[in-house]
Length: 267
Image 1 (cartoon, rainbow, N blue to C red):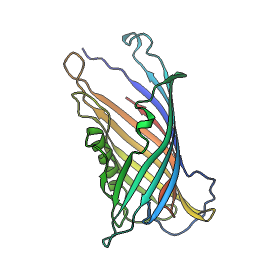
Image 2: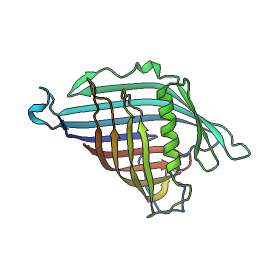
Image 3: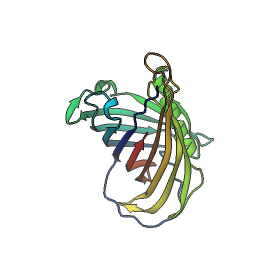
């Protein structure tokens, strides 16, 4: 017997680092890689917001209470990024350390516990090695579990997909969107995402003496997995994802200043 449970998800996420109003103006061609600059220390406060509406269609075949779900996640995290000097070959190390953080999760208005005690994240560090072109060539994290490997893979994949060449205002670059989501699926092959992202450089200008660049993006892709079905047999997960967003990069420090993404997932 084949049973289908179409799922529709509407998610909106907002991330803000070093947030401030910006005034944009056209400028020279730039490299879109947000790689930190050597010999600098940047202290950041990241505010992240995620709102998700989930609807499962299936009529009487679904269990009672499987109605629309509204989930809201709010997170504030302090971070310090210390970047060392460049080596003769142009490469350098950047260490990102997590400070105080706070997270709240609500489902249909009711609070839920966070996945892990927030105090466990404080003091944790990740060291990323960049080459002279801002591409990630190594990621070192404490421990060697599957979650660490997944984060390392995702960071490297993101860096590898960004072009090395520069672009000017009004130009668009298309990059592949392909990685495995770090979600535990027993007996499966993981949640694989593949697709493309188009990024357009809208403007380059100054904000309080700091050069910033603003991008607009659109993404289209698929998410697939083949986890084991309870009680034996097999099942498949097949979804499509599409969305758009805006990103502002601090060109002086090489860090993300703010970003907003809205996506619709159906499957």
